[in-house]
Image 1 (spheres, rainbow, N blue to C red):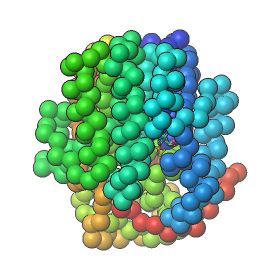
Image 2: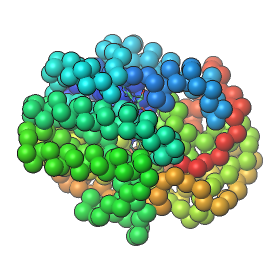
Image 3: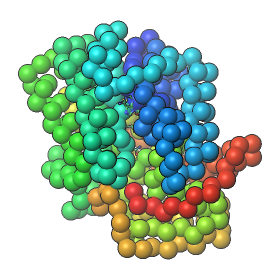
Length: 353
Ligand SMILES: NC(=O)c1ccc[n+]([C@@H]2O[C@H](COP(=O)([O-])OP(=O)(O)OC[C@H]3O[C@@H](n4cnc5c(N)ncnc54)[C@H](O)[C@@H]3O)[C@@H](O)[C@H]2O)c1
């Protein structure tokens, strides 16, 4: 990823919610390319503190604590600055942002549709409130680019195979609603202030050290454990699976490319695949897996391809990882890791997100 049309060397970059799945991978790549990176995180949501304090029986807590510790070890080894920040605190955000940054990535959120819907107040506390705190500070700091992490769910149920950024959004559920409200507020605020922002809509991410248990991860872990794979969705349902490395490329462009200012981008691989394609790839590694499809039970909308032409044309985004290759990388990482780490999955959950 060295030939990006932007140069991150020496740029001062803050990742709020940066110890999460996307954040730590992004921080490592930014640092590798010479940026001055700070990760700030509350560690409370989908993170170390809540794994330590909540008895979540849907998770293999031991394995995931290991993934989370590995994230921190990698960040420390890369000499990335780490700080504890509650982004819901207006004061803490003001103090942090006063340090002056070239780019701020706002990643903090309750990053699951199902959990945001069932715990709406927590979703507001950790998503909307941090968002308001951040734009309040940055609306007078045009030298700082804010990159806001939105979601493919803002489109609602797709009524055609593919969508682009000009299509109408029909979000439903707390998660999609908050993401969409954020986008609209950014647009309105920027019309009357100096706010410098760009919005990224990722889709169906997968990759190393994720603990979010989306379909690609649950299928893999159940295959690993020799269990039946049950998909609570439609037989031909498709998702625009995007490998974390492609998203990172897009996030760097959204943060630093002059053309990204004020724009919304689908940052996806851009070619939706059947969800059950995952099971076909898995069969090359776990030939005996059995797959069942049951009645759809999803917190997320029916989706398809999020076209990425705008990002390609305006900021030079070039995704590199088709599902066939990215998912194999991800599977291989699990297999390799199991040689010297605990990778025993006790919990049986099936995919509903
Ligand atoms: N992973 C995906 O598939 C995906 C897809 C689309 C959009 N997104 C969005 O991208 C962002 C990052 O996603 P992720 O997968 O890395 O999620 P994640 O849950 O792994 O990381 C989110 C991080 O934010 C931190 N956080 C939450 N509330 C906080 C608060 N009040 N103060 C400080 N830190 C706080 C958490 O501790 C966690 O480390 C989220 O906004 C998510 O909604 C993710």
